[in-house]
Amino acid sequence: QIVAKRGGLIVGSAVLSLMRGNNGVGVKGWLEDFVVHPDERGRGTANQMADYWEEWYRNKGAKVLHFTSGWDRQPAHSFYFKRGATIMNESGRDSDPTAFFYYPISERV
Image (cartoon, rainbow, N blue to C red; front, side):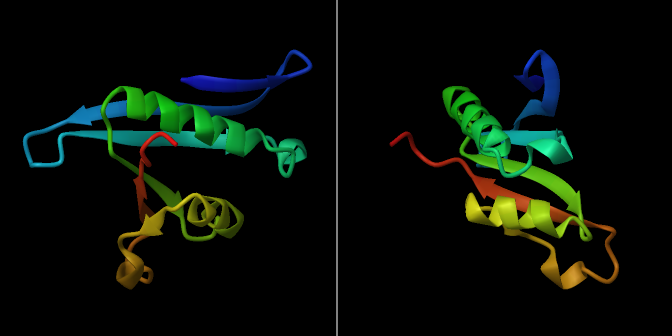
């Protein structure tokens, strides 16, 4: 778990996991419960956290990150899209309660 703090208070949190398999993909990341306090939005906290988790996953050998998010979380989805994520199950929007994201972990620049 990673947390972001400001002024001694936790203002963001995310759970990072690794999945290892023999399906040809190798190491994949899984992101859970990523949240930033509403008062922190627009202050760069989410980007700092994403920069951190990308580096962490990269160091672990992960090339791909997966996560889910409710369809109604459009501001969060906009954030993910700006960082290069895509929705894998767009066609199931009416039948699936959550969007399933594919997020490539870029090479270090």
